[in-house]
Amino acid sequence: MDYRHRFAKDLRTRMTDAERILWKHLRAHRLNGQKFRRQQPIGPYIVDFVHLGARLIVEADGGQHNESETDQVRDSWLKSEGFRVLRFWNNDILNNTDQVLEVIFSAVSPSPCPSPLKGEGT
Image 1 (cartoon, rainbow, N blue to C red):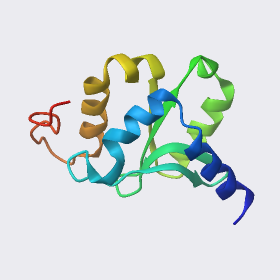
Image 2 (cartoon, rainbow, N blue to C red; image 1 turned 180 degrees about the horizontal axis):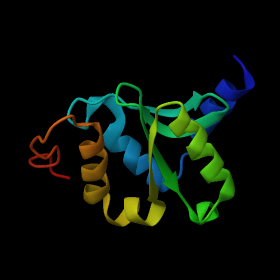
Image 3 (cartoon, rainbow, N blue to C red; image 1 turned 45 degrees about the vertical axis):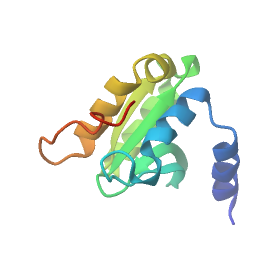
């Protein structure tokens, strides 16, 4: 196992509260049957969550990401590889989980579908 894979595995054990909440809803095909992976190495980077089929990356960001030039370079590289990147502030994930999940669901859904949240008790 190379360094990036070991580091990704370590990150999975040290997820932030916001990452834990997102993973609770994204894991095991819970978002309307969509498959996401967490802390996935892609090129030189490790992304928080990725839907490989939709080429969608979801990032949970804390204050250290505010106007980060490193994130801009990273996002540019990921976009050049054909990925779309959605970034959400941790505070929004923690306080507006349903709205964040709706945005993610819309990004992976090819056409309008019923909300994945209705009737799930979330």
